[in-house]
Amino acid sequence: MTSVDTASQSGDVSARQASVRQVMILANPTSGGYQPEALEEIRSILEANGVRVTLHLTTRAGEIGEIAANPQLLASVLAVAGGDGSVNEAVTGFQSNPNPPDLAVIPCGTANVLAHELGLPQKPAQIARAILNGKRAPLHSGLANGRPFVLMASMGFDAEVVHGVPLSLKRKLGKLAYVITALRLGFARKSSDLQVEFDGRQEKGKLVVATNGRCYGGPFTVHPDASVTSPGLYLLLLKRDDPLSTIRFGVALLMGRVYKAAGVVVCPFKRATVTSLRPVAAQVDGDPFGTTPIDLCASDANLSIIVP
Image (cartoon, rainbow, N blue to C red; front, side, top):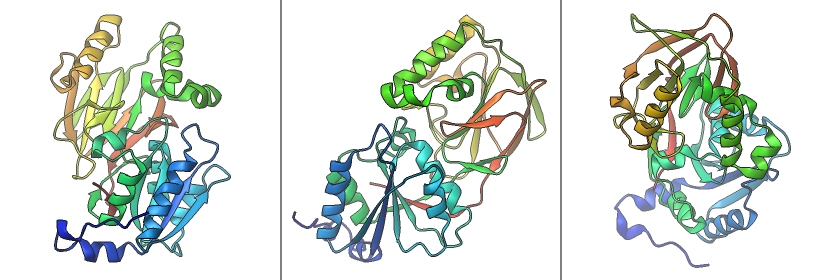
């Protein structure tokens, strides 16, 4: 395996590479996206360039968060091999770490919205090169009842789907499991009104999404000005969820114009509280997160992520 020659690209690349001294790769071997050959290739390239690499395979739920929270963690880069939920675990753990390492993402989960958001590489050699180059960007996040979210927190139908999808079906079918669950729930559910109070304003709707980034559900744009590398959150509120309104919302989302669609409110906000007469499902970065009420705000965590 040959070394990666990047010194000619920028005058400070050598200094950045020198700072990438030790990398810990975290992966869940029981997940559907586990790719041992890809991880070995990444490790081989990094080690060929003088980086000490530890590959840690998790054995239980919550282990990523525990490792990320450890103030004695000996790694300048923590590389999470997984989807958005695994990244969320690491960021949640970083809350308790006074000196968290840089975060790198090896996209191999069911949902990789953050990879779309940042244009992260997918091929092992490209991922290794990005880590070696050491280019960093600030990683901002939001808080839902104190729990960090890198991408979004939502309440309503999409959260009901997240709550309802069987883990076995998710591992077997990936994203198709969400489609099947959405169809199953869509014909039987009775929606509830959500009340949202934010920045001195009140609105009522059926679906509420607090987004930290541009993308929702994959590559689909909520608002072009939103970004995980810039401070600030955006609120998306779908006022009605009758069939026609839902179709209009879906079409606008596919066209990247949902922030201009009729019956949809999309705007920046600082703090918000979402309540309902009966508990409504909530999700954070694609994982179940209890029910309403939910308090939302930006986090002041100071994190960095490796970008191409």
